[in-house]
Length: 417
Ligand SMILES: *[C@@H]1O[C@H](CO)[C@@H](O)[C@H](O)[C@H]1NC(C)=O
Ligand SMILES: *[C@@H]1O[C@H](CO)[C@@H](O)[C@H](O)[C@H]1NC(C)=O
Ligand SMILES: *[C@@H]1O[C@H](CO)[C@@H](O)[C@H](O)[C@H]1NC(C)=O
Ligand SMILES: *[C@@H]1O[C@H](CO)[C@@H](O)[C@H](O)[C@H]1NC(C)=O
Ligand SMILES: *[C@@H]1O[C@H](CO)[C@@H](O)[C@H](O)[C@H]1NC(C)=O
Ligand SMILES: *[C@@H]1O[C@H](CO)[C@@H](O)[C@H](O)[C@H]1NC(C)=O
Ligand SMILES: *[C@@H]1O[C@H](CO)[C@@H](O)[C@H](O)[C@H]1NC(C)=O
Ligand SMILES: CC(=O)N[C@H]1CO[C@H](CO)[C@@H](O)[C@@H]1O
Ligand SMILES: [Zn+2]
Image (tube, rainbow, N blue to C red; front, side, top):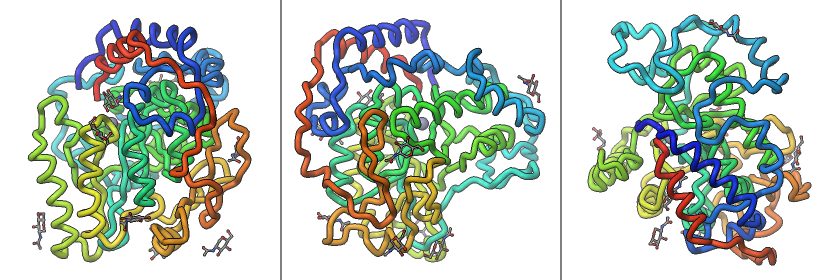
């Protein structure tokens, strides 16, 4: 993970400034209809986010702690801190300590050291690293919402395929209408931290803040509060697991890694990534998954990772008996804290997914704040409007000025992912 240059803050501030003076927000639907990635990624201002920014930490900065005026956050944290497992942070403000001495006995169930997923501290729930159903792929993507995700989400919609999207809080506030699209399309949304740093390298309070503010961000823009998360880089131990659990978040890891995210840095080649996808397909075909399913780490990070997911989808769909969102495979019907959304069970999803009778969506129409949608969703309700029909909502597109794009690139270029 690359360090974040100090210029990130300035770039983020500049982006926010531009947001307020340049772009106008459309709607979830108008954003979803854009086909040109440059237009998709032109910054815009979304009033509910603009009005709430003081209630959030600086976008893309590691969370230094709970904000002074956040009495709800302070109370929630105060109620749990005394019972958090006594494990020292493994670094400072999200940056791991290099060559940290750590016992081979793995006392903390530190995934980064050992890929441990069965906690050693008492009262801590095990990770979800695989789905239980045979020959079933728990399908999910990290690091979104990516502003340029329309081609990928269009493809999933066309295949009537839902997935679990692990959203970064900072991306969610940068691209709120893109986050709303996940709900509109019937995907599951989970938390992927605020700033995408190493979670074990935060203090208890900072771990709490990285999760808490991402939950609040997703609630603000979609109307729903997630009950699941995935640690960036898989970096979790029993201390971090416990804090997430106290926030009501189930921890999702993976069994196999596509390494798709490493191609942009040169740490992996496309050939290696394809071999990883092929190994997954082989496992489905050669009996390795006869009694259990699996989860592979894949990303909504950039054009390459999303296109590679598309290119491999037909072979995956052929090899696996079922490809389902993670919490469909877990039969977790109450996916969000709010009770007006019901996810499908495994049997409901697999008996209706991609049927000829229309969208299999369990998801509601967008519940984004300010959108006025009041349609409650149920696992077997029929979606009211196929997104593919895509009637324009008649909203002015925001300008895709070269300046906005440059500032956006400066910001994204500074990210560590
Ligand atoms: C939380 O607990 C840790 C030790 O378990 C302690 O170091 C820290 O000061 C506590 N934080 C707050 C805000 O009380
Ligand atoms: C199935 O394929 C996987 C991935 O290539 C391989 O690791 C595993 O050994 C194979 N198992 C069998 C039983 O052939
Ligand atoms: C989204 O994907 C585009 C490429 O399609 C990439 O240039 C951009 O950096 C990504 N943005 C984020 C926030 O990951
Ligand atoms: C990736 O970029 C190519 C070329 O611009 C485009 O045709 C394709 O649709 C993009 N794929 C995704 C998943 O965005
Ligand atoms: C989900 O429900 C199915 C029956 O529809 C059952 O076979 C499966 O064991 C359940 N899975 C979990 C994780 O509870
Ligand atoms: C679901 O309920 C929450 C409040 O609990 C509300 O904010 C949201 O708009 C509702 N969403 C839908 C789609 O009804
Ligand atoms: C549809 O939902 C209703 C109420 O939520 C439930 O009673 C019924 O069994 C569901 N039907 C199917 C086919 O899942
Ligand atoms: C996996 C699969 O069978 N996908 C199909 C879902 O339905 C659409 C048409 O509605 C097909 O194009 C996909 O191939
Ligand atoms: Zn990630």
